[in-house]
Length: 83
Image 1 (spheres, rainbow, N blue to C red):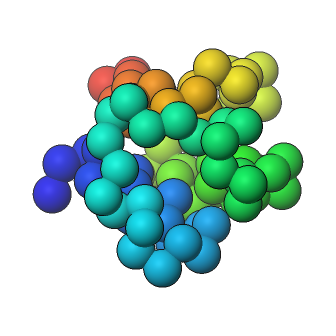
Image 2: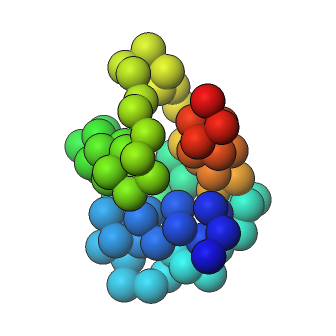
């Protein structure tokens, strides 16, 4: 399974979207477009991504641009994996 699909699985699970996120692509908007993605959900999403991918995200690495689209979030995770 590729990184984007894994990210989508986490998004779907954390936001309780019942499979809807699994059909999204890299251009699908997240922050501001998905009502379930509020500040608490972002915190839970980051924690879950850290656990699933074995990465660590510092507070100063987080900004809204990483959550703009599925592609941006996937790229953020890929960059953390490559670090």
